[in-house]
Image (cartoon, rainbow, N blue to C red; front, top):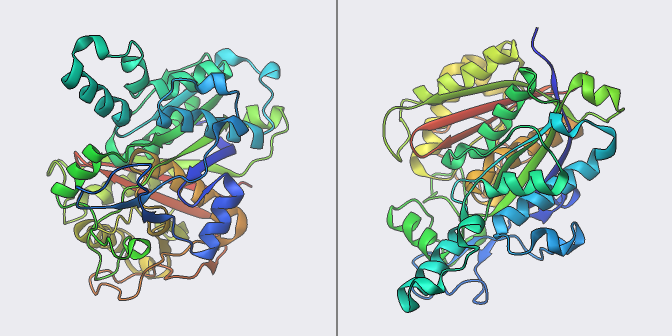
Length: 414
């Protein structure tokens, strides 16, 4: 019998808030975290897209010693701070656990784009001597997991997953499997991202993936709406503290949910476009349901990938309808990306935490900006207003470039 893995803490840094309470309040208020990018953050004069979901008023020193994040890229700092939030929430005392049995699995979709851009400019202008000796260790993706491991003395498995927009989901799912195969008792797991740069925005915009509603940024992310025109880039981090049930019980931890299912699949179809049949998404969700040992009719809520792109929303809706059949109409579905924007590698873990919150609170967050529902998206997307709903099982989907898919299922702890 496989080990049960529970969530005993989590930390959130997103465009709609820093910390768990601020995030939940923003979700319940249907608050958008998307706006024009200020000039002091980025010069957007020559960019076709001038808005994003930015983390606001972030001060790492409120959570950790400044020296512990010195010289880190922002995506790494986010991971360290969100991990501290998770540990604090969990009342985790490092002196009372076996740190050899505590690990980290923190990934990123893009990593240190800021350092890469800035260093490239310096190199092009003034040559190799202008490359900082800190360039490599600040920009490579596994520094997020490494910095968390170093900061908190976690000496178990230490790895980073890089699967584009599915990174956060895969990171949590693989961390669960590490605990289940008894390679660790505790894992800090999730995704982190801070890649709102000229190169990233220009690249996504030129492949026609981004919304271009520069005149109305707060309403640009509109999943399942017929007038959607692309996703909105965001930044942030979501980290979960995962423990085996036995470990959590032994230290008297409060349990906020249980991770019961994890599925992954590949579209094997196209580098960036999802399979319009939804077959890959169906395989991922079906695998997660099988892993959870539940019936399809047990799923109460789905936090959809819901990117606000024409193909994704339609394909995901089709996949849910085909897999769940008549029960699909009874499931509450929402895309919180309508408020946060798309946090890329951090999206899956942030949205997994939102699932835990919905289970705990008995309320599902809305999909805002859903005014004219696409006739090809026929399900209940909780438009614009949160809804009370007892949630025993919540499912979270993530789909990424390269045709990579991931699904997590969370259960109310009993």
